Each structure stands twice: as structure tokens, then as C-alpha cells.
Amino acid sequence: MLTKYTNAKIYRNKDANEILVENGKFKAIGTNLPDAQEVVDLKGQLVLPPYVDPHLHLDYVYTLGEMEGIGAASGTLFEAIENWPKYKATMTVEGVKELARKGIYDEVSQGVQYIRAQTDVTDPKFTGFKALLELKEEMKHIVDIQVVAFPQNGMYTYKGGRDLVEEALKMGADVIGGIPHYEPAREFGEKSIHDIVELALKYKVLIDVHCDETDDPHSRFVELLNALVLLEGYGDKATASHTCSFGSADDSYAYRMFDLFKKSKLNFVACPTENAYLQGRQDTYPKRRGLTRVKEFMEMGINVAFAQDSINDPWYPLGSGNMMNILDNGVHLTQYASPGELESAFDLITYNGAKCLNIQDQYGLDEGKPANFIVLDEKNVFDAIRKRVNVVMSVRNGKYLFKKKPQEFEVPFSL
Ligand code: FE2
Image 1 (cartoon, rainbow, N blue to C red):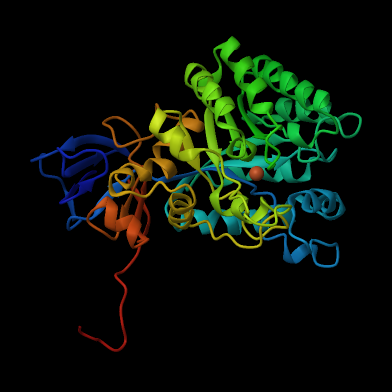
Image 2 (cartoon, helix red, strand yellow):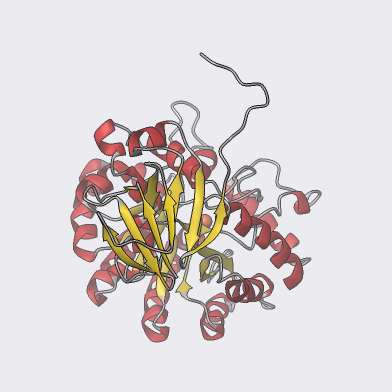
């Protein structure tokens, strides 16, 4: 079946206004394309590749309410990490899947089709991890999920932590994670980074480290991660998530690192809503925003993407899987919002996230790739972001995931 989408405003492609889809793939993108059995008039609306959420704790979504009585009152990152094991002991595979499904539907119903799921593996029973491996298969018709073997409570805060991570890689994790700033001494943080890179090379998996998620400017594990992936030529397969401390580092250090990041091609993920909420807790005033140097990364061509991070868990009570909300908060908090900057700002929740996931060969609006795309309720990029418009259509492998009707008002009004 051949389907033609006409009157499309295509993101990053000013020369085309039509899309031809056949057998689930983009057959052509251009102008005056051949007729098709099915023709869909997009009426000038904006077409983008699907949103990518490159960092979401899917095994935690909607657990905040479940943890009542266990204690998550102050809202600090370290309190949440401390309390998590008490709840974890009560989890079941089916229970995790039920909540995670809700999180997936939140995201997919708002235009996401790719999620990197940070998944705790500091549980000898691997309950959350097994749940996510199963969901990855069960939900692949609506979303691509990469599962990260993430040691939430560290590799060296107790004996056997590193071995659990390796076990998760044997069980089928797509990505190895880490949390060096949480290890009990700097040397153990560094040791964990060496382990992560060694294990990534051994098991041929991608890397995504929770790196320097602290306001301490002396937390500089990203420096070691970057040096190792540079040495191994593995930077494009590695991501440093959060790097909040880099936003507190002094400029002379930061500029030296910018050059090294460019050389390694290391990817970055910032979580604007989550880290604005969690960081700066020990500051009085002025309070830091807790975000890494997104604006400079964008200007220098260092790949950086935005992510949701959490939905209603002990780390962050809010979150709805709406990447437009993440983008809107992100461009404010990083001051990346001039009209010129906004023209490429959708990259932060689309192409840049896809680069973190290392899926460029199958992602994007190009001939021959899977026909995955979304349509926004606006005609240009600037107004779409300014008005935080909704996704009105999501297409996956040439089929509708959803179409939304235009908003109706019971009582019509006129200006
Ligand atoms: Fe995270």
C-alpha cells in the first residue's frame, strides 16, 4: 500500500513538502511525488521524526505513591537513593511491568517512539531488569526500548555490585551504566569508570553513565570517562548523563574539556526538569540551576539531548512523558531560546537523542528508513515551541499509532 502525505512542513528540510510511504518505509521525500492509493493532506503542519527520550527510569515510574510510609520526604537525590532499596525488596516483575506500561503509554501517546530505560541492577533478583527486558519485546510494535544495566546503588558501596552489572550484560542489557559520584570514595568512582569501559568493550554494548550528578565542581568523572572512550575510539557509543557539576566548574577547566569532548565525540544528556528540581539543594541564594552547559555544547557541535528522567518517582514527583514540556523547560533553563536557536531546538528531543542511542542508521526522515514520524499542530518550528503544541499524529512503520481530533469548544467564541 502506497500512502502520500501532502502539504507537509518538514523539519530541517525546506525543499520538500510531500512524503511517500510504502511497506512501512519512506519511499520518497520531495515535491510533486507520484500519486498513491491513500492521500493524507497535512494542511501545512510540521512533520518531525518521533521524539526520543534518551534517559527514563522506567522501572521507577509511578512508584512515589507506592513508597508512602517508606520515606521520601525531603526530595533530595541522596535520600531517594537511600530509601529505594527498602521499596525494591517489595517489587515483583508483574508489578514493575504494570507501572512501566503506564509510563510507556504516557510517552508514546505524546509522540515518543524511542526510550532508553535506565534500569536498576543492584538487586540480586533483577526484578526491575527482568521486567524491562520483557517489556522491550512486548512493546516493540509501539516503541523501541534500550535497556541500561544501571547500578543505582553503585558498584562499590557493597560487595558484588560490579558482578551484578556484568550479570545484567550477560542477560541482555543493551547499554552499561554507572554512578561514579555515588561510589564511597573517588578512587572507587574512577575504578567504576574503568570497569564500565572495559565491560562495554567486552560485551559490545553502549555506555550511558550517570556522571557527576552533583553540584560539587570537583566531581569530574566525566574527564576520565571521556579520556577512556577517546582512547578506545568509543565516544560516539558513549553518553554522559546529567554532568550537573560541569555547570558549576570554572571556565578554564570547562574550555579545556570542550576541546576533549569534541575529539572523543562523547554524547551528553541533560534532564532539565529533574535536575532543576534536585540540584542546588544545599545552596542558599543564589541557587544553581543544576544543568550542564547545554548552550555551549549546542554552539560547539557537541551532541547533547534532553530527557524526562523520571515520572512520579521518589526522585521527582512530577513528569508526564511530554517531551515538549521538557524542551520548553530546557530552553528556558539553558537560555537557548533566541529565534535563531529555536530553529534547531527540536534537535534536543529528536536527532540528538537518536545519536545518544546510536540509531542514526534507522532514525530520521530519509528514504529507505522506517516510516516513523510525528505531526505537530503548528506550521512552523518557532511557534510550535513558543505555544508548546501537541503531537496530533504519530506514525510508526507506516501505520498510525494515533491521530488526535482538533480541539473542540462547547461554547464557540470569537475575538
Ligand atoms: Fe537518571
